[in-house]
Image (cartoon, rainbow, N blue to C red):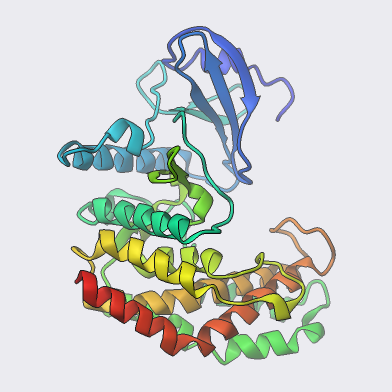
Amino acid sequence: MPPGTDFNDIISKFKINGKTNSVRPFGSGHINDSFKVVTDTGRNYLLQRINHFVFKDVHGLMDNIANVIRHLKDKLTNIPGSDPEKEVLSLVENNNNGYYIEDDNGNYWRVFHFLSNTKSYDQVVTETQAFEGGKAFGRFQALLSDMDPDLVVDTIPNFHNIEHRLSNLDKAIATDTAKRVSLVRDEIEFINRRRESMSRILSLGRAGILPKRIIHNDTKFNNVLLDESDHAQCVIDLDTVMPGYVAYDFGDAVRTIINTTPEDEPDLEKIKLNMPLFTAYVKGYLSETADFLTDPEVNSLIDGVFLLPFMQGVRFLTDYLDGDKYFKIHSTEHNLQRTRAQFCLVNKLEEAEDMLKQIMSDIWARYK
């Protein structure tokens, strides 16, 4: 934390009930700094310092989150058996009825109500977890499917725009800052063979075949809070909620669920596909989205499965060629190791394309 941070002063600027007993670092997020605030009333809070180097438009970011939370709660209020206060994050107003403050050091802060008796997992290990993850992100998309995308701004422009990512790679190749291009000729050729196919979602969107919707854009499993019975309760980390295509969320979730190894696995022989977890995720996802997805959107989901690990590999390779400026690394070859693992996953997925499509088709026919 920046030196001189006065938590009591920051907390006093929000409408928090009770006296603060303690403020402790919380969670394992890599972007924002999070702290659990324990009070003497039994109601606790999550205080976060917003990373304004990543999210440069803090006002737009917080407007996004407030508008999305409002829409989700309005929808859930009309669904029997739902509990909007448990199933959606709740922002705490500041003393001027806004949702964030700027401190004397130029840092931005916000507060959420802390959701007690919940848990999250960094890795999916059971079919039940995969199913619940699919339900959670599917329900999130379904509840937002009638919200006007124009009400949400891009907090990170071109985040899932593959043309933008490839353009950045081309610049990195041309400048060759770290003098590493000669070491990655095979990886560059791998990318070049897939430039057109990996642009399919973007092309279908521009043609009006795929509708732009409000999506999460960061569908790691640890962005789902589960209750004590391991049932999905709430989708969290709303900073990247932006307009996009549903296949982006689906593909990113599958990227982390179907892979039997970490995303930087050095032994490529160990990288396998966990089809039971994929099947369970699809069942959970389509059980919540069948009422609003169009046939072209469903057909695009497998394109998303290929695209997201490919795009992640492109980003890792770009950073490797730039001299490792963006992603944290543990060794000089870490970004290259990540790149090769992601491209190996793409290969495995392409080899299983017919099987993946058949699973999707069978489940879609059941829910449609």
